[in-house]
Length: 280
Image (tube, rainbow, N blue to C red; front, side):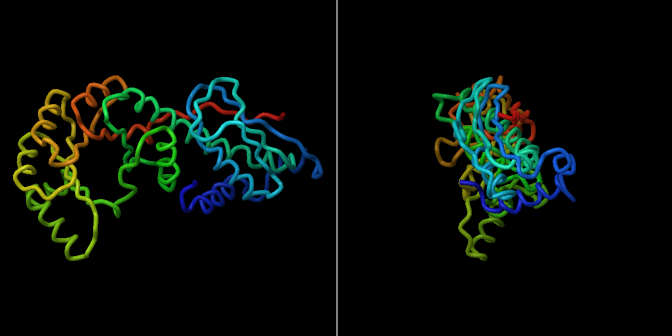
């Protein structure tokens, strides 16, 4: 199911690309011409955006129809055909670039996410995304992470208390920040989880003594120190590792017993998957 707000995003994307009209297509393709195009996979990966492509096509021209052969989340290979787009040729050509831009971007995110998920298989660790997303595209990019087998961290500033280093540095310490957060939730009658970021075992000790949180983010820990931190926490709080974790190193972090690993690269550095829309 597409995230709320997708229709408005589609409208803005089409308006940005079409402007006063697709003059090349209007000049060269007869109005009455009908046909089809196939979505061709040119690179192996995880497919994301078939449902979105259908919404884009329908938004622009209700006569456009998608005949799907592969669904979102499918593992695809070079030469696979994900769907046929059928209808007026003018409309097919006009929506082509917007449709591909979304699908290539989202499929790239889903593909990179699946690589991280596969790398930690069997450890019990969950791969999370972050807020390092493209402005206005967060909901779709987080949807793509789910299609790749990952899970979503908070969606924004509004759905979790996340006490980062700047927060507790500015307030004067971790205990003060936790106490302030709990008082705020009580005062506002909000039911939000509290996570606190720590940069070392000394800060972790402060959290262990104070309590009052649901999850601890262990930032830029080495695997050996992370293992010790997880042992010290001993299930009192959820644990999350973050900071500079790559595909080459992610399994060594997951094997420490940490519950979650958050990876900003899933959304800020995923290369687009090579897809093409070709006349059928």
